[in-house]
Image 1 (spheres, rainbow, N blue to C red):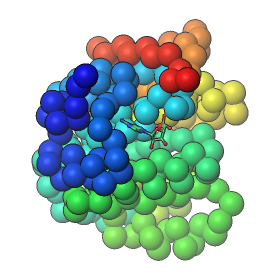
Image 2 (image 1 turned 180 degrees about the vertical axis):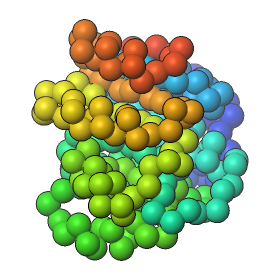
Image 3 (image 1 turned 90 degrees about the horizontal axis):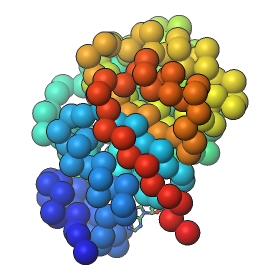
Length: 214
Ligand code: AMP
């Protein structure tokens, strides 16, 4: 048996996990957290239900909190790209819970609601931005979002994104992100297309493959 406290996460994060009632890390968390804390890139072949959201969120929050930076207008330090608004909202909600005792802000943007209100929320800048690809690009093209300061990039459910026809949007996002960043790619399946995307995005990644929890 192992504990979150063995993995090197900061105390405010351990406290938030205690509040949520998590005691043991899941297999993907146990494998991913130490490598991500070191700043490694990661290719995770894992489905929803394995605990992958916490696997990428906890070490990222730790790293962001360990290197405090003033918020830059209309910017974010971590970008999580998700295929659907439901998933984006769920990731943002989970991350707010894990960041409860840290001074880090989480914003979420997706299509289907007015752009103007979201643009106003982006003005002061945030630490973590969770977004769907189309709406993210809308904001970037309108100049209401600056992606030059992204330090950590997560492409979640990459296979689903490709199935939904987001490949061009993903390529556009990759083209405007800084070259120097920590990158993570999660996919439930590993096809040639995912391999090509991983080769393009990731630098000497740690590979973690886990089976579905149930
Ligand atoms: P995910 O695969 O990230 O969608 O997570 C699946 C579910 O497991 C979510 O409801 C999480 O809140 C929960 N979860 C994640 N990690 C743990 C853990 N270490 N212990 C208990 N529940 C967890």
